[in-house]
Length: 145
Image (tube, rainbow, N blue to C red; front, side, top):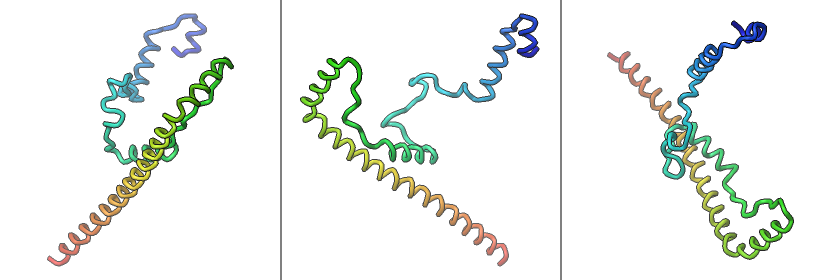
């Protein structure tokens, strides 16, 4: 019974709809998606990159987001905004140098990540060349004997 037929008859088979949803979830692989941070496993600084595409994605993310902005746009009540600006001015001597150091660190991390990605790509190319050469040696040895 299709959705239009159910609307005409006025009855809805909830179990049938739920079964269709379960089938779609099973087909799409949505069951494998972690639902919380605990399910995800290692994340953050301790996480390792093993998949080449993840490394490329990480380098691309770093290329756009390595700079930390020290200030955010303040909105809301004008009195609160004024107080927040005053506090920001007073505390600026403390956090602005830290933000500058963090930006420098992030930029250098981006450069290292880019170099690692380039080296990975070069290694992959050299592996292909080595494989081709090994195949040529095997074929030449086969012709020789």
